Image (cartoon, rainbow over all chains, first blue to last red; front, top):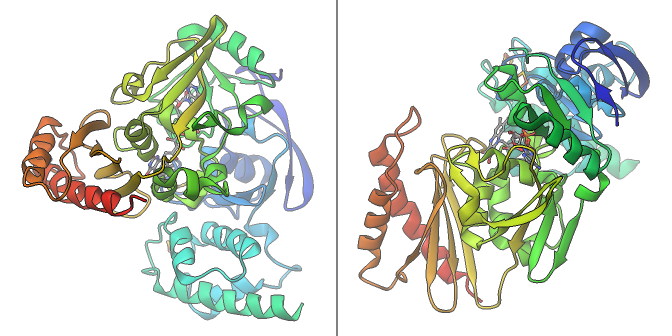
Length: 169
Length: 275
Ligand SMILES: Cc1cc2nc3c(=O)[nH]c(=O)nc-3n(C[C@@H](O)[C@H](O)[C@H](O)COP(=O)(O)OP(=O)(O)OC[C@H]3O[C@@H](n4cnc5c(N)ncnc54)[C@H](O)[C@@H]3O)c2cc1C
Ligand code: FES
Ligand code: FES
């Protein structure tokens, strides 16, 4: 049984956006801090650090989850996708990101990476997700700027493009 | 907002977890989905010396349908139960309540048994367990014991789980022919803990109402049927007997009013749903 003692850092191996990562961390470090401070992937934002705001949302094994509520001790073997993994090639926005740009789905952008990851995982599983389902997924996020309406518009626009692509694929 | 240091043990088998918990005693705690515990660690409301991670234990991951109940292992996440294909058919009350347990982003990791162990007075799953008359299965190095839902919840975030012990599984009694079930809650926003939550079970002979979010633990009472002139009085008595909490979300008076209104609506729905 792996025993991660409190007195030192321990090896943690996981996959980040499809690439293997191997780092050293204390078991008590949060996944959000692990990503930002140890790996240097600062796309994942940190708002409240106790699970209420959704800013830190990443995909873990395909499902959206709050990175601030995962301890480094639990990360071994996980497959993690973050906002850095969304761009199809360097410098090009994904359909979802492009829709957020076009529909003003962000203002300050603090909440955006988390919301993108929730919607990315939703549309991967259910490209035809309905408005209610999208709303339900967004309920796990706080945005202090937009009033959510432009986020909904962006999400629906992205869904429509993704659905069309799916049909023509 | 950073947890105090602890030893983190990734148990791979149940005996490993039970031995670690026995050795750690008062200083040891189980960590399951972490959705309630990690915030408490981060705020240093909890400072255990040893955390035992049970999510790698294969034998705790099962959903087992048999003997009139669904047994949900301690490693089963809320999202897994929600997507179990037979849920709406066999456990309509739990199926109705699960979407109110936090958000997609927390149900993906939070476990069913973790919610029971955490025992928040407003939590939906403890309320369902009380309403259905379920059982919690506890395990320690010394052995097993099963406890009825009524005896499991001792107070606000206090349960019958003893040091060195853990929840191994929970049993939810399956839907019975001729019964109807309903769940309703009022929260400030969807996904927040309930201000008041109600679960009703209508049987062939009567109806019972369980209420969460008002007293320190979910409470249940038999109630008159909706046609009866006594229902209003019974709801009012129940509302007062719960000795309502008062906090920043709602006054005691508002909670009593919700018990009366939401309680009636929930009872009526359960009776309508009987088949
Ligand atoms: C933003 C947000 C909103 C939420 N909203 C709701 C809500 O509306 N309703 C609701 O009910 N919950 C809500 N929750 C909490 C819910 O998501 C948790 O999943 C649940 O309360 C705990 O389950 P867990 O598996 O995450 O347990 P953990 O957080 O890992 O553990 C919680 C506690 O239970 C103990 N424990 C866990 N498993 C066991 C076991 N097998 N044996 C013994 N002890 C054990 C731990 O030691 C700890 O004390 C919310 C959480 C967040 C972050
Ligand atoms: S930073 Fe994780 S939910 Fe707010
Ligand atoms: S864009 Fe500023 S918080 Fe959402």
